[in-house]
Length: 452
Image (cartoon, rainbow, N blue to C red; front, side, top):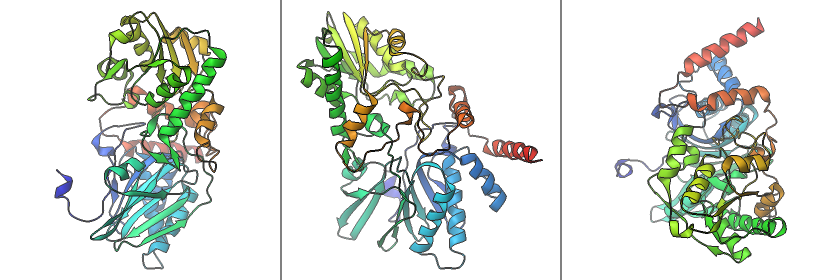
């Protein structure tokens, strides 16, 4: 209803959940700067050197950052580089690509970006590692060719756009107001897409980097079944039940491979959001029972194998195991389609600090005891990578840092992890506007004192 009242033929929309700091509307995207030219920007990911960039922005241009959002920092870096690149030239696609090239040299971390320059065109680019997804779509209309850039291909599907291709790592694309399409490789690619997109984040009907998310989840179920046949064939399993929604394809394929019944044992309340991204442990725990309700006849007197996409904090798993027992299950076995999450994600997922994660310093047996399951089975990381990479032979490397602690950008140390742990603490997440200016000034004072 509101969109129909908008005028113009270009725009940006963004759906955000906070990974750190404030969740207030003040940090909703897209962000806007009026100079140079008027630029708006929407960003998926996380800059790992945002604090350093914030200081540089203030010293170079006296640009004031109003929020704690790294997306606003990214916008101001882009604005600075466009201003620098356009000083000796008329604004055109080459100038914009030069600005993106300079931005890549300054920014570290994960960023899939869509930006609009007023009265000039639409710009999209992806970090050199391609950690976060970004796709291009095209639609032929009576008025001419229309383009769309989105984080997932399903966004194209529902609006009648055809998936053309992914924006490549380090590539920028620009569509001017006349519909002319330009692209350029602005940084050397070193492709490592986030493996958690396939495990949990992406919709199953999406295609990311030429890989069907749905097929990867079927593959996960197949390799889990193989592992159970090899190491847990003694388990007396009556029924396989998915924990809705993401685990459904994996649970279905696992049941088929093992020759077991597949049943929907939980009914999902569609009006409760994804508990993983909710701010605050108490809210997440409360929401599990509001979100899921067991069908008791599928549990009564049975040994049930529950399948989940992953186990992060353990909030959902612990509650659901208890719910299964309350519904009458004799034994409850829990299977995770992903390996243990032992490290924080620093590239744009609200995967909490190590203190809030369930697995960092625990054995599988200790995790099983804490969750309360009779058996706990994890996917192996090598198997998970093969499940995904086998679909696209060109893609062999992934960012799997939440599982193996290897951060592809090479700039993550203990100091950074402690800092992000503080920012991500549940006690620091609120709907109050952030006081970024105070934080920035304190950082500047601290650094100046250290320099002195």
